Length: 172
Image (tube, rainbow, N blue to C red):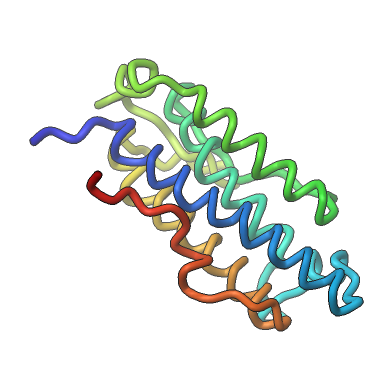
């Protein structure tokens, strides 16, 4: 069985982004019920030396739609700074889901085997499209989704494993 570049990443991105959207909604509802300022979550961290919740959500979108766009363009860079509030992060995730759903398998699969570079502080790190998706984009995507989930959970939001898994693609 051959797996296409699109199949390698887009369904997983959409599953996890759907879960992220749902746990953001659940977190906001929890904040409202408890009188917690949702904006305090945006700046929350698990450790002093890590980046905040906002960065984790931005990175989830950047390592999914941004990765797809990077593969198409032949280059990828770290995300820029963001000042998004909680509602802005929810919109960013929703917009990312919509854009990924609009990405056709043909347009992404046409990039299979294509050379691309990751531009980082003046360095050019070479990849093929598949190598980039498998060894850089997907690990970062899941890392930041997990970290965002963990930050929200550490603040007391009633999240469980099912909230992270999202809508699984079961056999029908």
